[in-house]
Length: 289
Image 1: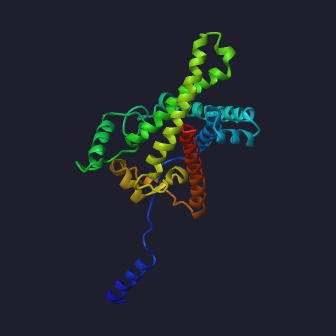
Image 2 (image 1 turned 180 degrees about the vertical axis):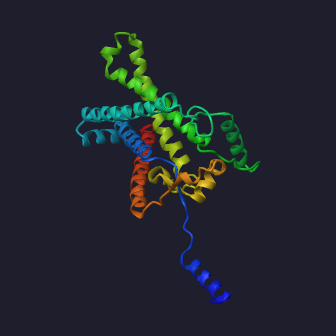
Image 3 (image 1 turned 90 degrees about the vertical axis):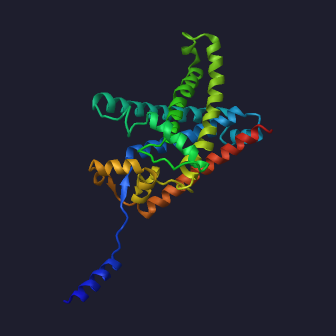
């Protein structure tokens, strides 16, 4: 075979078999299921808590009637609370095991930690300057500053909202060591912090995760667990470069999501967003009733 024929054969092979884009794993199966449990129970808590919070609103009364009254709503509210609490405690257990038993580095500090550091403050300032055209867009590591903020906002809510909720649920027990005014305060705290959590998730978290440029209309990675190499480099350039430098990039290689996985993820994700935005609209309307 002549050199010309070899060149044409190579070009034809290249045309017939284009290089497929690589995918890298960002979340494990356990992390993805944890997210499903959390957002499902959170939507359940929001859908059952808001009718109790705005019980005088017509839509709240209709929701209560649809499920059998306020007693039924309270039952489902408590059920979702227990499931979410168990998921949260399991997460705390995993952190403890990773940090103190397995002695894994980077749990509380470093590029892979969810704990905020000086770089996050610097990235925030740089991002604000970039928004108004006064500087370059910052490059991020495994977790950006707003992702850490989202994480700790949820962590704070689990403790504050959870404790106040259980204090009301098991009032006789808590009244043995808490003064009466503390239980009244628990009612106010649970109601207002719960409302704040709902507004934060539906107005801030949804936008940061799914509706911002680069992710609109939905960031699929939390459902599929993987992201394309282009997306990986664009969103987390510093982590990508670090993995290349440490020779660990290939260990993160994953499998491209199948079409059915993407379709199921879209249905679940858009359903959750639709429910959240509907509840947000009902919440806002309650203040004008």
